[in-house]
Amino acid sequence: MQTVEKTFPILPMMCSPIPTTALESEYLPQRQHPRCQSRILGLLGWALLGGGMLALVAEYPAWGQSISNATVTEILDSNQVYIQNQRAQVNGVAQRQQRVRTESARTSLRFNTGAVARLSHNSSLVVGQCAQLNRGTLLVNGTLNGCSTTTVAGVRGTLYTLEVTEDGQTIVQVFEGEVTVQPQTEVFEPVEDEEPQAQERGFPERDSRGSSEPKQLGIKQTEPSTDPNPAPPDGATPDPNSPSETPAETMDFNPDSAIVVTEGQQVTVDAEQEEAVITALTPEDFIELLEGPLISGFAAELPGISDLRGVFERLFPDVPVPSSLLPISVPVPVPSLRLPF
Image (cartoon, rainbow, N blue to C red; front, side):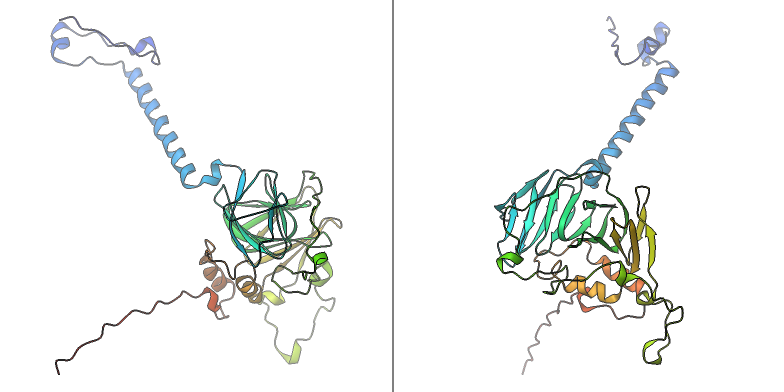
């Protein structure tokens, strides 16, 4: 019987079988050159490595995807949520470079990267290379960079809020994880609303926590007292470890800046003055977030909200955990016993 040798074009000629005797060729399989065997093992190794990388991308879709769209998942308080000035519905999709705007409503968005974002009242966001907030307040959970016309918040899996005030300041509050805040290098065209503003139509202006009174935020509020030894109120002894008594830190904010904001911190950026002020969040900030319009009332629980309990306990070990962070206890039904008499 004539033996037909099979050759593979991806292997060099040195992969041809090693000559054997007639007896060996009848009873033993043909041996390959040792160098050919090492090349085959190398190809198998690269194939396994590539499969592992594909598995990682499948598990963490944000690693292999860029922002391309955002889907509306919930609408609360009213129907005044718009995509490109068209009334939005649940499951409506905002494509890249399209704008999502709220008036007297709140909305939840799910980006194609898997990140979840929520917009408060009177907010405007453009789906772009980042979640570009033009006004209002944005809550982000997951891998989604938020930005304004002056600031970029670079993240990798975290929970933070981004706010653009009326005077052009950008405020980033980090509740879990870490955010790197840098100046915005891209130039965005100003976004003009074709519809009148909410306050012009009779709706009260709301801040990020749902209050009808606008917040007065600025550098002056976060500056420490000029008195080097301020007297504590009512003769109380100041606690140097208390976040509310930690002095603010003022930093330069220029094109070379890269400010790392960790969990339990807030940064207020005044790009016009090229200043950034870092202060510590307080337990009240966590409570106001949990009970405010960015979380309260939504049917779907915010992914990762349970992680806030661990953060709160680490930051404020002497403060009782808010009830909104406590696990919900489900009563266990007790079967009734029937007595024989």
